[in-house]
Amino acid sequence: MAAKTAGAGLEERWRDILSVHARTMCEIDRALHPHGLGASDFEVLDILASEAPREGDHCRVQNLVGRVHLSQSALSRLIGRLEKEGLVERSVCVEDRRGVWVALTRKGRHLHTEVLPLQRAVLDRMLGTTQEAAHEAAQEQG
Image (cartoon, rainbow, N blue to C red; front, side, top):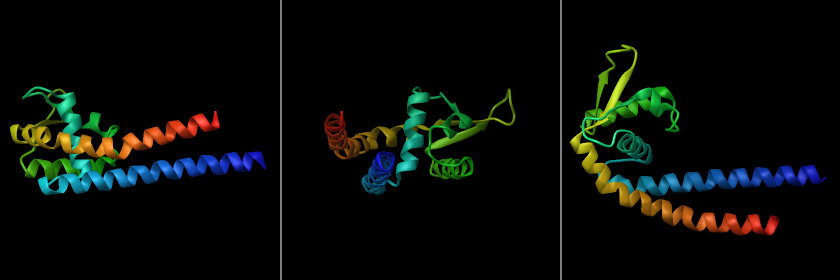
């Protein structure tokens, strides 16, 4: 009986995590929509801004795959859309012709800087209280 209860508690915590993730992604989408971005678009811009912080820096697309919660084909389509909007540019890796580089354009860097506070405010609002509640629940169990 205890194992069943522990399993149910674990499942409930997992569903809570998924629920918080879904609600947070929806809120990010709402906050960024007026700027023409969705949550996944922002994630790619944000990773590129941190991985390639200076103008002219670039990142291999393969390095983004494990960090963005999209399939490789969905990520390629997203990058293609961002490229069409002038936010990123792609180039072929000279050393390994199978590799593709992606870099933020000046327009992409500007947009990222403009919307970063909006995304962070959503994270603070959605996860700040969640972390406090999770901490309290952990203390009650411990």
